[in-house]
Image 1 (cartoon, rainbow over the protein chains, first blue to last red):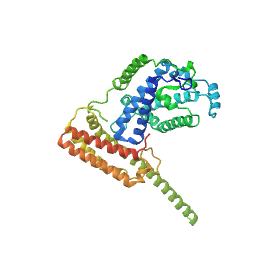
Image 2 (image 1 turned 90 degrees about the horizontal axis):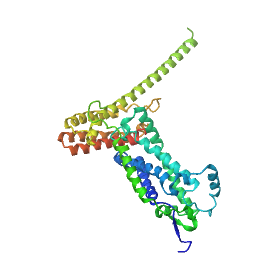
Image 3 (image 1 turned 180 degrees about the vertical axis):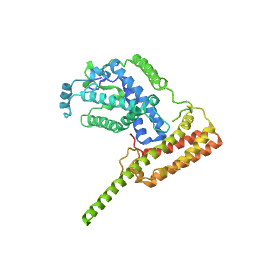
Image 4 (image 1 turned 45 degrees about the horizontal axis):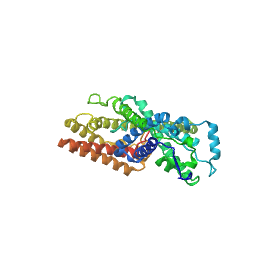
Amino acid sequence: MTEENKLRLVWDWPLRLWHWLFAIAVIGAWITGQWGGFDWRQWHLWFGQFAIGLLIFRVVWGFVGPQNARFGQFLTGPSKLVQYLKTLPKRNAPETAGHNPLGALAVVGILGVLAVHATSGLFISDDILYEGPWFVAVSEPAADFASTIHHRLALPVGVLIGLHLAAILFYRIYKRQRLTRAMITGKKPADRVPESRAITNSRTLLALILIALVAAFTWWLLAVAPPDPPSNLDGWY
Amino acid sequence: MNRGKSFAACALLAFAGTVSAQQMDQERAERAVETRQALLQVMAWNYGPMGAMARGRIEFDTDRVQTNAERLLALTKMLSDAFAADTRENDVETEALDVIWEKTDDFAAKIQATIDASSALVDAAATGDEAAMTQAIGQVGSSCGSCHDDFRLDD
């Protein structure tokens, strides 16, 4: 293989799998929330709760995963961000191996907003049949507050999804960077990735252990820990 | 009393009349909102246990379903009258969207769907068949949700 068509691994498989599962969870929850109505609400809850489990995994993976998955690797100060923004209009500016400083901001923004969005859903009810697992544990004003947050974040989340897709298109068309392919295969051309920024492996064993732990914890958090809803007719109001 | 004075008195009385008419109007509007909310609350009070049965959270009790379904059917028939008072112009705290009084045919159709679904639930409860009741309870919930989607503020 020549240096030009050699590929280097930058995204580990747990991160890639996480990305696409998270995309399914968010888009599924968003569509069923906006247009699914009552008949799709159970699916809306499943998508949202799945997203919560995925968010927990991503936060932990941001500390223990391979270098390009780590917050410490891609979060930069404002000066590096400004420096990067200056190169943004340049079509041939070098590609960043992992998340570029602006993309890092997008990661934090998307994770943060979706964490608030999904969590607020745990505390609300549709006043008909469905409610988040923690609805029964909170007061009515608290549930109303969570409901306000949950409904008002729907549009911003839609905008974030749109911005994310627009950014991918911008890099693909204007800068000729194939970000989607890299998020599928995990690899980028070696001429764009210095050896120090490639990862040697995906930390598979650690990932498998973590997936099991996070799945168990999420199950506990959303199905075991919440108080039981009323189980008899006394005081049903 | 000269003419000017009596004109002023009349104007004052007329003004007072308007003010009190507006206040009455406001009071009526507030009571209309309270009545609507109370009606929906009592509907939820009757629906809640049936929903819990349909979801397997409490045991099926056919007598309870029969009782609650009949009550619910009676309550759904009050919906159109309860929403007859147009409170769009009043300063009231409500989740009722203006579109209720704009797309009146659509709103009436949604109410009719809820009445029909409740009626079907009464029939299902009469059979005592759990699968039929579960299905019918879901249909009632769906008719509630479909109206909320279009006519209730999500907040």
